[in-house]
Amino acid sequence: MATGMPDQVFVPVMLAAMMLPMARAIDCPVLPQIWDTRSVVISFLRTEGRPDVVVRAGMGRVKRPRGIVSRLPNSGRVTLVGELSEITLRVSRVTPFLVDLGGGKNLLFVKVETESGPHGWGECYTQADRDTSVIALVDALGRYLVGRDASHITHFLHVAYHDFAAKRGAMDFWSAVSGLEQALWDIAGKRHGVPVHALLGGPCRERIRVYANGWYGKSKTPADYAALARETVARGFGALKFDPFPGPWRTHLSREHEEQAVATVAAVREAVGAGVDLLIEVHRRLAPMHAVRIARALERFRPFWYEEPVSSTNLEALAECRRQISIPVVTGEELYTRAEFRRAFELRAADIVNPDVCNCGGILELRAIAQMAEPSFVTVSPHNYNSTTVGLAATLQVSAAIPNFLITEYFVNFEARGREIASPGFEVRDGYIAVPQSPGLGIELDEAALARHPGRQFPPRALPSPADEGP
Image (cartoon, rainbow, N blue to C red; front, side, top):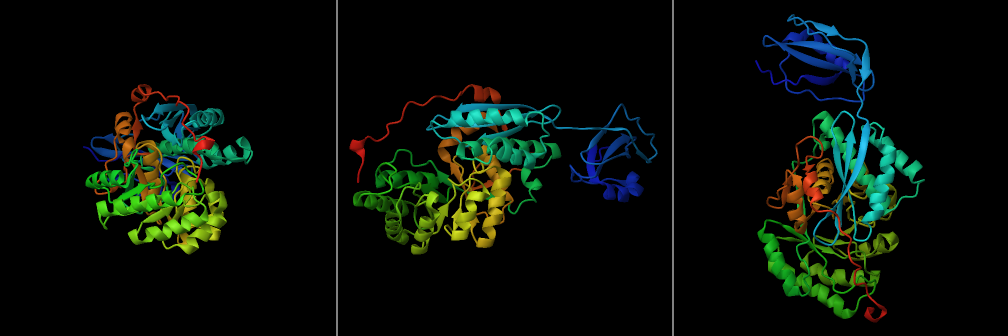
């Protein structure tokens, strides 16, 4: 007779003691697995339709008895088993996978394998011309991860920064750390049989709102933007992010470029109507005088936000801008770890922060940043210039566990490759994605598909010459 019970569940010693008198009557849903604590293993041996129970006591990590445990007679009695040996999830291999996205950059995934347990996937943030440096750091960090217990996530982060990096972190380093950390969380979730958000205190929501990015392609005119905006909204998105600024990313703009940016936003607003949220991307390019003047011109279109109008390398200047405009200001995609976000909160430089789980330090670090933001009434909208697979999965998991979450990023032009290399795919319905409920991050990559699209070396980009500079 099926009982619906697992062969083993892990429970605290005190709970096990309470359960012993009821051993013969146990017929319950799966109990939570509690690791790295004082625990026992209860094994259900099914005989003649009735579960008998073996309790294996242990301190610290869950233990496995040496040799064979004899099958209990069908008595319903509880037997304590001695002479215990340790079950480990020792990391055995770390492998990076550089994958051609088919667009402006490669994707970088990392697989962490264990000797006798599940494997995990993570994703590292990449940019064109910089992915090889992140791979080198994944390989170097991987040497120190191999042989360690995959459950020691916090300590790995500690030694990666303090010992490996000698307290000198930067984007490429934190991108490598973030991918490895995600893979360890994927292992942890699979080990426990629960989604990662369940290990972060449980979900605060069942679905995650997303905004579309990457929809406007090589649009140059306001009419180009407007036509593609209508198409994207027709797919079910209720929020669109776009960069309306022409020309190279420079601090000072000509009046003509300012006016064109405003005209583009006006055209998109007219095309999609008042019910769609417009998220204006500035890419850290402006001096405060331009940032304030353009924001005031855009206010009548009621943008949802104004993202990185001024570089966060000068948070004082960004805070000055925020005080002079009424559109919510976003910063964070070029800040890494809570140490760099601290000053943004102290200066009240932003209304919304957008750390990226693939470069801010990982899942734990993004949650810590969100916890710092909450007392300052700052919301969190994770940046996700990553794939619609592992990077998105990690973003969804941590976003589910953040009370002050607002919205996150979804690149529509990355969908095709994502569907080819991963399963299950994530589906956007009415601008939302359901929180994954499968163990771990809730996604698996197809290594054969990854191999069909090896990362490519990009040709030199057409960077401006002195003759191209302005204003």
